[in-house]
Image (tube, rainbow, N blue to C red):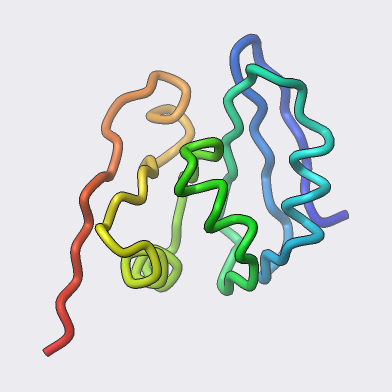
Length: 109
């Protein structure tokens, strides 16, 4: 199983149990989500992103991320041009919609 699902009143949290996220995994997650629910992905196990679809959903603000590893956070900061990756530090912050990491800019020297 590549992910586990936890359903709450306002959100659905997917605990990703894979090292690589690809388009097929994101399509499975979206197909199992009812409309008007917040989608949160626990990224603690993820080491690599191979999904343009995930990037698209992040830009449209349809998916929120939390428990990101520093390498994945750096990748998103580079790929998402203006640094507008909205992610959370942990599940509690996602649930309460607090302490959101936004506007992360990295410079290459």
